[in-house]
Structures are given as C-alpha cells and as structure tokens.
Image 1 (cartoon, rainbow, N blue to C red):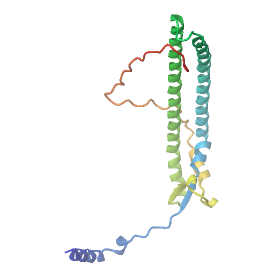
Image 2 (cartoon, one colour; image 1 turned 30 degrees about the vertical axis):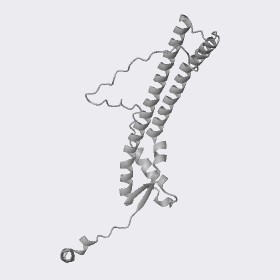
Image 3 (cartoon, rainbow, N blue to C red; image 1 turned 90 degrees about the vertical axis):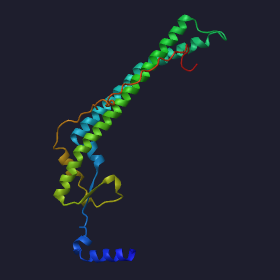
Image 4 (cartoon, rainbow, N blue to C red; image 1 turned 30 degrees about the horizontal axis):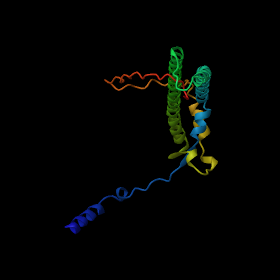
Length: 210
C-alpha cells in the first residue's frame, strides 16, 4: 500500500511545472548597519540620551541628599544604643527616635527605588522609539541600494566598507526632527484587580546594624 501511495505521489509531482518544484532564490545582496552608532548619534537620540543622563544625575543627588542625614543619625543612634548598660532597653525617648529613623530610612529606600524603576522604564521607552525610527529608515535605504538583507554591525566579524549603509540610514533618521518622549507611561494595571493592601509591619526599637 505504501509503495502505491508513493508511486502515485511521484507521478503527480512529475506533472508539476519545474518552477513550482524548485524555485531558485536570487543572490542575496547584504547591507550592514551599525544601529548602536545611529541610536547614540542621531540628533534626537543624542538629545534624549542627554536628558536621561540628567535624570540619573538628579537621582544620584537626591540619594545623597536623603542618605547623608540618615547616615549621620544612624551613627548617632548606634552610639547611644552601645552606651546603654548591658541588658538595658532604650528609654521612651530613644525608642521613639529609633522608630522615626527607621521610618525615614524605609521611606528613602522606597523613594529611590521607585525613581530608579522609572528611569529604567524611560530608557526602555526611548530605545523603543529609536528602533521604530531606525527600522523604516533601513528598509528605505535597502530599497534604494538594491539590498535584500540587512544585518547589524554588531553581529559581523569583518565587512567590506562598501556594504555599510549606516551613514545613509542615519541621514534618513535625522530627517525626523520630532523630539523623543523620555517619560515612559505608567505601567498598566490589570483590569478589575486592585493592589493587595500591605499589612503594617511593627518597627523594632533599634537602629540599623544593631
């Protein structure tokens, strides 16, 4: 039975046009693009990267602004706790001071972490916008140059400079002078779901490091 089926299939294929049985692919014309260079040097890309760096600098300054007083207070509290007689607990005033310190420390950590996450989203958002501008520019230049495939410069070991179309693609990208949005939208919340309320955590009457 299998021989009959195979024989019938072979006979049917014999009647197919040769072009359908084996279509030869045209020779590939490869172009190379340095997308990293474009993403770092295009006019609006460079402006956006400068703004993102400013956000990082502001975060570093804010972390120092809130961290220095906390460090000073933490050292002072540690000294006060170390000065207590063996086995003696802090009095009410010192315990309240420790609780205040821990609250401020937790708030500072939350603030810095939140701003770090926002900057990370901003960076990803800018990269997405840059990619959306580079891709059609590559296609346009490929069509002009007769290329059938484009590869990224980072994926090649060595190239002939004549196949590099980076400058041409960069010129097309620079034609769009609309500024990039450096502020990513807030993450979408799942529909119908509310964030679970956090249970308050009791503060222990001791500073960090004790």
